[in-house]
Length: 347
Image (tube, rainbow, N blue to C red; front, side, top):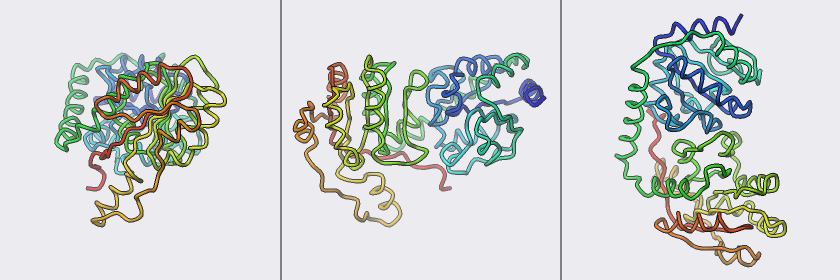
């Protein structure tokens, strides 16, 4: 009866929208999500944990720009918002600034997350059977304006980023995307390039982009990538870390070499804890204890018998593609100071 009520609300909505979280990916429900969105003509935004749950370039795709006020405003304006496989936690709610004005329908397998942050028509279910039930029940909705509204939001996001002179960051992220095979998994540590990737990286397909945004743990990227390479040695795997995070798991170079795992480790070396440096400078005018004494990562990798190369933003794509294509482990070090785009949740 809850599904029937949800289907009725969505069928009669004037401005429906969908937030797709990690639950959609884990339930292997991406195709059902796409079919439902197309039947309802409902724009879809994916959370950072739900990357790849909806095609990035689809006309109804709002992509993953959840840390942007334009997206937040759009979702607040939805008269019916379907949230699938997400608890609308800190990151997915633009740091709890998201205040929905319409009716929220939440499908969530984790009972502890159901209606935990916003009142909703809560459906305690796995995403796959719940989306199938909605597909069988909702009425097709015509909405010629939906794709226009999506383009408008994405255009505002692009304009906001363009005004901040962040060409280097966008170039580096685009180089990583072009170098990485579409079906290769990537594992992102807590580092500025990963924070960009949360919003701006096209995962290409479900269950290929992984990060530790839920726990915020430094050192996650490389060991997680080794696990993926051990589980499936047929595809190259990418790990991305900053120089600070790399030091948390540097000893795993021995593991990578001993088991000849197909992992390429991209280390962005900005001399310290870059995001903390940025936060402190913005808040206090100068950073404290963010700079690090660190090794020569190329020489260190080679001391383990792992090929290493020092690259530049201009040669990153070619160097990374070459490393990913070569069998066994490798390290690519990019000396670069990257900046985050300005937050929109501070008012």
